[in-house]
Image 1 (spheres, rainbow, N blue to C red):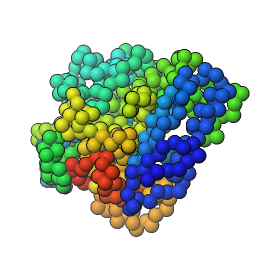
Image 2: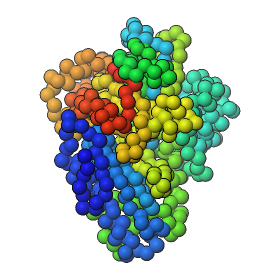
Image 3: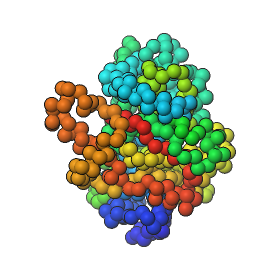
Image 4: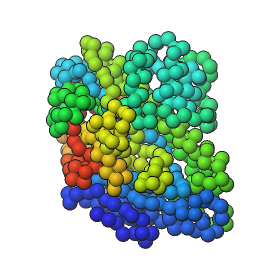
Length: 496
């Protein structure tokens, strides 16, 4: 499907007949595409603003989970020339997915479920994470990501959560993280309060799930659809896997606010600001310092997000180790779905933006990585309590090598809260969830105000608020974006 727009930008939709495209999302997309009109206005009235006189949005690909966002629809992949669009990443910079395979079976979790829930609540929400760090370590994370952790951890005693950080294994795992989980920068921008003093202190930011649709989930493999690829990835029927979905939380928010203020300050005072509220950042000599600052802020946040997912993985490993015997816990892959990279497509250098879309590259594109015979792993979670999918990318050029990052909302968060209460009760009765609030505690049971707020937050992410994940997955296979390797179902979900 192609999308006609007043700017004649090539826009391709990768949806099948079972997926409804919401009018408000299409209107938002059309409004966003007027970026090219603003760019042409800048070229005429602000000479030198763009070094590349052919600067423009080149093309756009829409993934099957397309839905309205905040100015730019979620499920949008954008290729630009001569500039980047910071709002096409948003504040949740490097929001992404991490997945571990284990040697555990469903019965290992079910038979210890009460204790595991208690241990998870302690580690995640009741002061049990114990992540001692120095200023040097925090700075290394923000400047060098996972490589920074590896290098700076040498001087640390294996205390607290570091007991579960195996340096040799982590060094190998770098190859299983997009861009090695490390964007090297030379400074930390405006985060002195986070860096803290030189003394060892317990970090309260790393290991944060965040709100919304973010989660850590214990899942079981319920169906292997491609046995050859599953074998390559150590995926087995009835096996327990761990899926993590989160990003840069407060660090990303800091970066996003600074970037937005910088963009507004750059904009020519003589011109009306863009009607859609979306500003571009040109790659030009005139704005060389702003360009450098943008990438530094972006990479500080992205590095934190990679580290955040790593530590959440270690926190769950610690939680399980408190009640279970020794077990294997191996990283399969970690990659962003909110980010921008410098890329050359069909000989044209530019920038590829992922706004709620995964990278889904082919085996050939993944040469010299552990995935050169399989294609890039793609994780598409369903809604809370619903089935999720593990796929292998097929490198579809028309889709800008992208895939969905979820099922996509069918109801706004506001409308989700209004859904029939009986439907929510039916869902929550059969679903295992751990949150910062324990509704079974005696002191919480008497607090109807707290319980009401707790229920509202869960209603916003319940299955009925999202599209049918099966139609989303079928679209990927029909359009040659990715092939299904395995289906997984949740046993227990942790929400922030």
